[in-house]
Length: 269
Image (tube, rainbow, N blue to C red):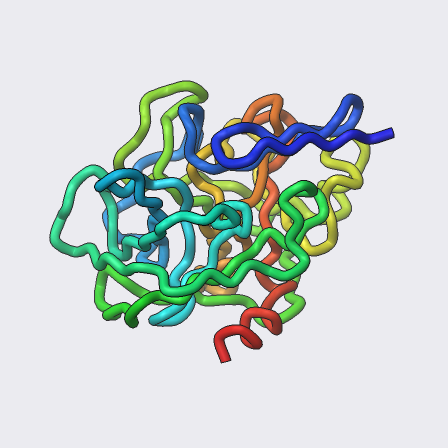
């Protein structure tokens, strides 16, 4: 019998005994993007930093994608606690103000109604944030392109995960946006024995499983995939294996964006 134990926020999620163990990727004292390299400034201009207020300061906790001028897409598990949120657009170094940033408060959070924080393997790990005002689009702030509803990419399709991350497990935090190449792993492979098995659902997409992976702090951020010469956001970073963020045959697991296009359109109008 499978036993699920979920500890919220800065703790881990553990799935029992013989099954692979998912873990959320919210920022904690642990890892973030492992491997990869520092991105060219503002080369992923739809990447946002989701921050929560504690005392008089804001702290980065998750990533996200600007999908309309007034809307951000992120993971449900990033925002299923009641906090004061803000979104930073056009950022590169999260520890300094470079003059290109736009700071937006969040006026409303829309979590998918089927999301269950006690069951990460159930899926539905997606949320929309309504910004208090519309973003100004420029060279540093752009909208992420979304796939057509239902589109599924082939095995080994080139993709990149982006986020503010540590350079190695337990390593120093990178203040600068990082990127790591994570080739897509198709559903048949990702759900096979020795990989994720039945933990991964059809509404998810897998990428990586080698030496580079997403880790703590990248939850909610985009999986940017190359499709016909364009970068398209095909995933919302959801979970990794609790045995290590770059565990062999345990790719990073993302919410598959193309499974939620109609839901997002129904919210945004």
